Image 1 (cartoon, rainbow, N blue to C red):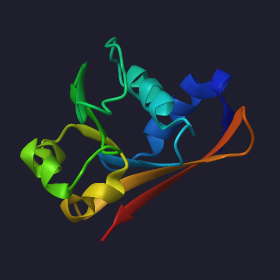
Image 2: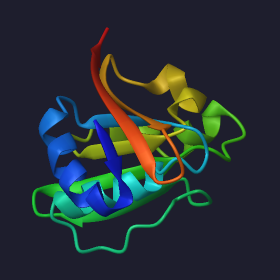
Image 3: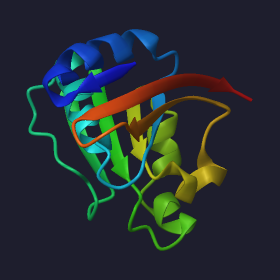
Image 4: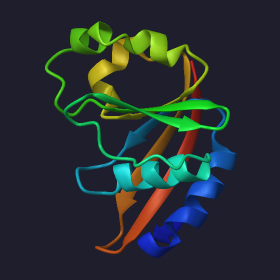
Amino acid sequence: MVYTLEEIDKVAAEVIRLLKHKVVIFRGAMGFGKTTLIKALVRALGSNDNVSSPTFSLVNPYEIPEGCVYHFDFYRLKNEEEAFDIGFEEYLYSGDWCFIEWAERVAKYLPDAYTIVEITAIDKQTRKLNVINYSA
């Protein structure tokens, strides 16, 4: 699907309907809008929390009516063991939503089933989004 920032809330509601797994990996180059989309998804799931990038904390939790959303950003991860040290595997199997940026840095910990949300830029204002539900 193709969208602009003005359509982000409508797109987030549509994306949620397409997610078959609660572990969701966001792919896209730096500045393509991964965190912006995650903010809209967290809102669409019913959270009133202030969503921000967990670049330095690695994970930010957000309360939603049916549990929690954990937002991970592994861009600054030095090695996979750092993810293990914060209990990443426990989050993955908690039954709560896990939204993960830069998941390729923790590939060995990913479950057998997850959803990939790919974001590509068409121009400065427009993005293309592709949702892929993956099972090993």
